[in-house]
Length: 360
Image (cartoon, rainbow, N blue to C red; front, top):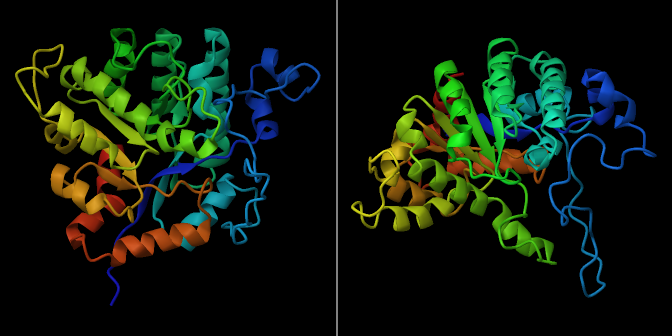
């Protein structure tokens, strides 16, 4: 008899429609958003120079086609309506949704433009996702380029729009996220009781900028930025300074934490934080301040749980990016049926941890 486990998706994706978003833009930006003669990038910046459609190998061989994709509905892929169908057909109770185009928000060089686009994005996804179904929880965007404005927008999207929190980009900003320039945002997030989510996506700034093989860049671009930012937040004292602050790390799987556990827990007399405290990696993971998105059927997950505990890990579908409805359902099924996780560990990873972290 199959186990009954509540499934909560901690990292699904909004697929932005720029035409849908245009009415929410500031008038100064609206005019050119869909004008190809004046604007070649739509609304958002590009993630890097290696994200683009491709089906030809360097040898000239055309890649074999994958099986036909099965989306959750006939609605626009990744729309609010498509997400409602996904929840129902995949057996998922609720989902936290991250941007797709908006993953590049850290690369905006003009702070005033970043502020306007973030506000427009939040209004757009409030209308087209949050209001479509109460089970959809978009993560908002805030312009970390202007901390005062980021604090204001964070409060608005939590208090007025009822979002669970905001996404922080893992790449693009000029300073690491542990830098004290950003501390007012963390103080506000702690006061609001909302969550922040750092999401991988870009290959830039990792030492892989000159890679010409897309799959090589993909190996690093998700877990490595998460590891960098996790270390910056721990060793610059952010988690210890703001004990009510909750920050999640998404799209990088779970294995990157093993590297940090080995390096961070080696010598507590050396590896301290700027606040003078010294906690083990497992202390941070068990504190309720951290959530790590992963695929529940990752082969290494049981070993990571054995080393780090199960409290911080949570199932992420990534729908509709690299998985379709069939793949997502298979992932959930494999997680429920795997014999190397206890029932308590399965329920924690598939739902309980995320609901507790996002306070949903």
